Each structure stands twice: as structure tokens, then as C-alpha cells.
Image (cartoon, rainbow, N blue to C red; front, side, top):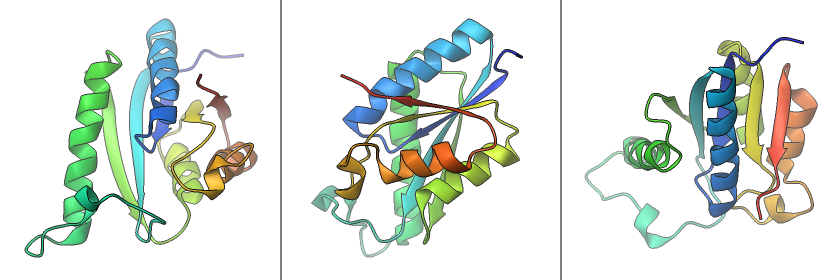
Length: 147
């Protein structure tokens, strides 16, 4: 078995995914691995707070990407991984497909993600995104339970 050289943290920036971020940062430090933070923005989210409504003069995709990048920067600081790379992807499809595809493109050895996401369906026993990534990824997947 080889050590992990490239770890992708798939995050929705929820409280649940914070635990996964801490674990991913710890594993990256332990293995001396490159850490890549990935946030997937789905075009038609179930529910979003008013702060997620873009101003009329800003294209929605740019608004969401800029906001996600700022929040990823904050997360990198909180987990002590300022050297991590970050990526934001927008999709009209499922986040799990984007995560699996991104991990393959990056030749990731490990994908780390939280057990539950922000959506209603993801709050079931094992989130649909997490279950799909476990099933479809071509590398190891660590699903972090959190508290």
C-alpha cells in the first residue's frame, strides 16, 4: 500500500464538513500530501439563506464562485492548511459526479468528505453525495462522521 500523495477534500462548507476538513488536513500533514479543497456549487440548491442571493449587477455564477473562494480561504486558515490548493466547480448535475471526476483528473489517492451535507436528502443515514462518491470513486474515500 502506498502512502497518500494527493488528497481531495470535498466540502460544502457546512458545520459537518468542518470535521472532514480537519481530518483531511491532518492526513495531508501526516503523509506530506498535497491537499486540494473542492467546493461544488449546484445551480438549483434546495434552500439557501438570503445572503446567497446575488446582487442584480453580478452574474450568479461569479457571485457564488467568489463567495466560495473566500470561504475556502477562511477554511484553509482554520484548519491550518494555508498551502492547500482550492477549486470551485459549478454544476447543473450532481455534486457526486463532479467530485468523482475531479478526483480522477487530479489523480487523487484519497477523497475526504463529511457524512451529511446541507440538503434534506443528504441528512439521511449516509448522505447521497457521500454514498455516491464511495461507490464511484477510483481511489480511497474517507467519510468523516463528525461529532
